[in-house]
Length: 201
Image 1 (cartoon, one colour):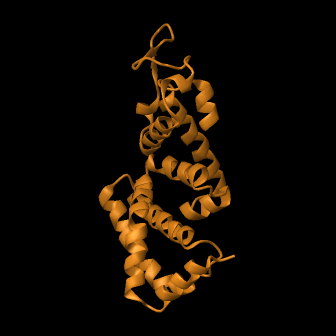
Image 2 (image 1 turned 180 degrees about the vertical axis):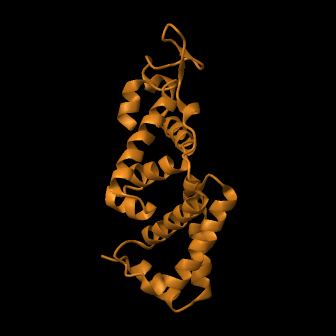
Image 3 (image 1 turned 120 degrees about the horizontal axis):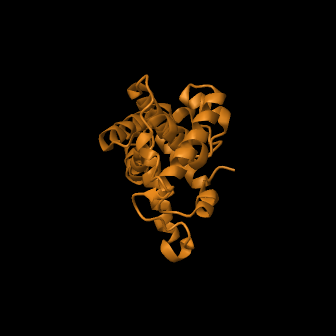
């Protein structure tokens, strides 16, 4: 059931009230920018996404049917704009994943940062730090993998919805999701235990 205050606010937007539009921008610009940056990895591109999203919101507010919250509706617009930016900048060749694969010496020992894989994660990092590490790792993934991971695992899109949003097949979504999760695990391996990785991925 629509929230009464939100219904009234939407009515003000539909009527073209300037104060309502100003309030909409002030209350939503921050989280919209952060959301766009998850996909684009660029402050400037994310800012463009937000600006274009607001223009779409202003143009299409009359079409908002309140089947979801206003925030959810705006969120879907931001994601759509970010994905359009990614598609435009996408190259025909996949970005190399070589730098995500850990190196091992002849004895099978990990080369690089010392692993803390055998220590209980609670004793090493807080839940917030774990989330931060994972967010940074996701940001480092190639665009095609990052977009699928964000849509499926963070935004909660179905395979079909993800395929439609990215204009690819459902089998491509499944493949990219599997590869993206696999590369993410490889990247996080030096700092997290296998059990923790299984819990969060």
